[in-house]
Length: 90
Image (tube, rainbow, N blue to C red; front, top):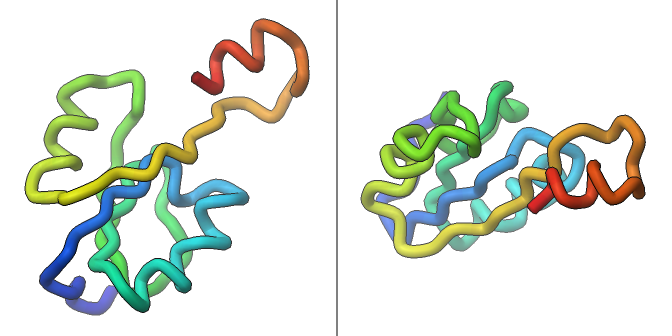
């Protein structure tokens, strides 16, 4: 892992998923990226913080020092489109 850029710092929650993985590189051109996710993102110029969006302490710690946050955590892809799954994405 390379040393993250200094600022401005952007937290991407769910940055290791399908959408998150697509936006990391373009966003890292302008921001120092920190990713909060259960699994590690692809290698790149960003910092990885393992944790869950369901854990307030994880999110609070990951957000420390960040100027902004993008929420991309969508949960399970299983049963996509059902009311239960849609609710879990938010």
